[in-house]
Length: 560
Image (cartoon, rainbow, N blue to C red; front, side, top):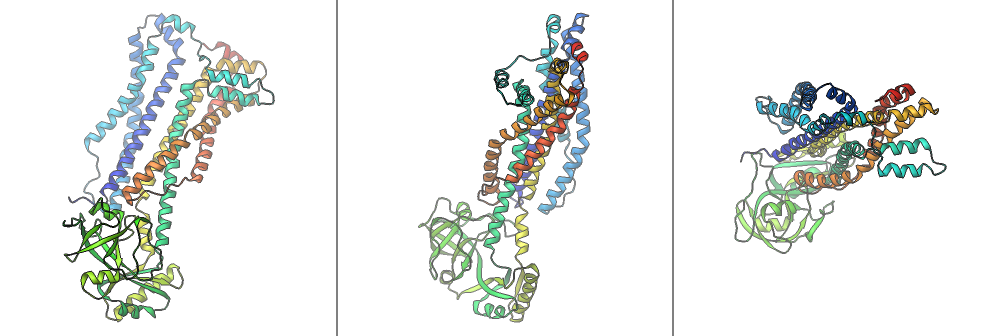
């Protein structure tokens, strides 16, 4: 009770933000663990030296644990203030959309506790495994450590490919180095693929919502809509409006709030104080409507002049008489008086597209015992620009008022289009906003992976320089590795992006519009992400590539 009509949408928006933040935090934590693992691998010789002069495993573990906690505390402190400011800003926008005036935007105390615990606890927890493994290394194992990994099966395949003629040796070397460490490879690819999937899914959902809005604009074939304060006779209304300059055609409708129940039952409608959200209305369809009927799910559409038949949308059927279908009998309560109707068909309709029930003017008049009346006008103008619409709306208002007909509103249909288009905008912005930090984490992970790869292959680069490889060649190989990782992430994001688009399109569509969104894949989003991934890979690997190209033979020989 007393819930806001858009409470579910607000909950989904906040849950999307929390899910995106949790995903970014998880990926960042995994990235921290990977970077620490690379650090421990690099410092195994130093750990061996410390153990040789008397340091215990526990003391070494406490040393690195203190370093991890210090870095985690600094990162949490740096993130706390921006997170608070951004949270208040986004919450203010959300409350403004919902029309709520907040007393205070301050977060509860436990929210800061959760942030601090997560910021300090997760990196420490993820770093425990590599930390314990590194602290327990023996002096002999540290002396025997060479820093390079064991060759994997994939590197063997690449080595065999390198013996084939007419293949670029530098590109093959980059490909071999990319898959040399499978765990490191899949970590980088997974982080990039996660960001890419969310980005493409977000823009694909935007394309789906745009398709819905295009459908709604096509269904709103009229240019001006007028609401009367009280029902009036159809001939009087059409006579008053027909000769207004700029009017090409006038359609008259009647909409009345009703209750729907099954045979022998009483209606129950859950509505809101605005008497709009959740209410059920019946629309009388003109004898010769301009538009085609909505998409039928069951049964048939109404025949002209038919009485005793009603067509329901799937939204109204599910909310009022679930389980009934075409051919079944329902009771409509009009002004509190029950009447028996036959369901002619079920149509698919999105929330906000109509009243939810349709019958003919003759059928409604027969049920109420009154002559056909109208309380809605749909005016089609001679030209469809906004200036003409506004002028005709004002002229229709004056003409009806001059004929003694009370007018509630008369406005261009563009206002309705703009209002319906904004319902899912915040959620889509959240999805695209979630992709941004995931992409940043992926780029940092790629840079970390490339730095670790350079560290592992210090001696290899020294050998390459010794046999005549130029710095430009080494740089090109390293940059190619980063680009190949980015492209692998794009390929890995294809199936998750399609699945995420389908799942979110169904879930968000049913939540916001009571029907799944049309499945659309944004090729523009895929192209943008590929370009961003490649450019990000080049920038992320530039430092590692420059470092690799400057390794001298002497530095390689002195590397432990």
